[in-house]
Amino acid sequence: MATTVAPVTARPRFRRVLRRLDMTLFTVCAILIVDQLAASAAIGVQSIFWWVLTLILFFIPYGLITSELGSAYPEEGGIYAWVRRAYGQRWAGRTAWLWWVNVAFWMPSVYILFAGLLAELVAPDMSLTMKLLVTLGLTWLTVGISIVTLNLGKWVPNVGAIFKAVIMLSIGLGGIAFAARHGVANEFNLQALSPSWGASLAFLPVIVYNFLGFELMSGAGEEMEDPARDVPRAIIASGLLISFFYILATLGILLALPVEQIGLIEGLPDTFGRLFGSRPGGSTIVTILIMMALYTFVANMVTWTIGANRSAAEAAQRGDLPEIFARMHSRFRTPVSAAILTGIIASAVLVLYALLASSAEDLFWTIFAFSSVVFLLPYFLLFLSFLKLRRADPDTPRPYRVPGGHGTAAALSAICMLFIAQAVVFFIYQPGAFDPSYALAVGGGTLLTLLVGEVMVRVGTRPVPEAPANG
Image (tube, rainbow, N blue to C red; front, side, top):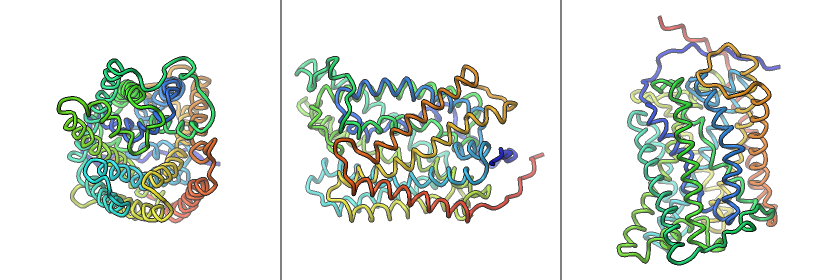
């Protein structure tokens, strides 16, 4: 039976450069995902119902739980460190592996979408091969940015968060103005808002996925100025902004575009063109918004890569993953090996799935679904660790505490895990359009990832002496 592992003694290993505003913008940039707006809007008008339901039953409880963990245990590594405290080295190593490798898997899907939007803007006839080359170039650019010091690297997601807010406001307010002039593109009535079961459930997991990432900033817990004070406040501020922007932008897309015309890759440029293309200077506005969206894709990947690499490096330094992940840059003190390995795996996944895909859109969704399932699995351990630490470590000061007793904590955790479970199922099994080869690609890839992770954990697990207290 696993036992609670004592924390590593705190020691000043990093500069504390993350202020509350940085953490809020970092979280907004991590969670507010422009590239998945079209996928969630593709559900139709009922997506508004699912956004609100997921916000109330999942996003808010998940934010409360993460606020307690992040303020009580502000250690480098975030989710990895929390699982380690609750369930020991092996489970912590598995968490760090899945948390890290999902970013490498996810990166190609984001940059395939980038290449598709770039083609829409400057080269509509761009071949799939050229899109793959663009994706590879962006992958290694992200690796380079994640290696520089966080004091500089943090500005990429900070600017990205501002651009995302501008894009979301433009889509939402532009959609409302468009509907006022031309009428709504889809019917908005009680029947349309009511949930339905069928092929649309394939996109429902995207809404859960789009709400995840509160714990990411805690991957750099020792680089925050005052995590006990700032983590809960940053989560509250970013959560309010994220909820508002997601619902507003989804509404804007549905007001402007008929559901059947919303493409996974073309959805954003089509929306921009519909909203602003006919206005004076409209083509310039559309171009600027697309360029801003392209920047946010890079910012998003930089944000997640920074957090995931730090968790993997921390796991390796504590003896829970192979030592290769622990190597730090001699000047910047950033996890250089973890960053380079991210680039290698992302490149390999891109080439492998490209051999199976018939189009950029097909390639995008398959890689995205596969990476998402891997990404979702550690969240079961996050919520279980929250419950375990409540019982096993009641004496640790909790600057923020989820209201209610153990029953409330257990209920909230159970609801959150149910949302995660349905997302995993519907990413693999697509109701109404089940494709065995797709399910095998996603499910088989996930199983292979778990097996490789088990090897990594068993090879990497080793005793590491605790650092002496700084005195």
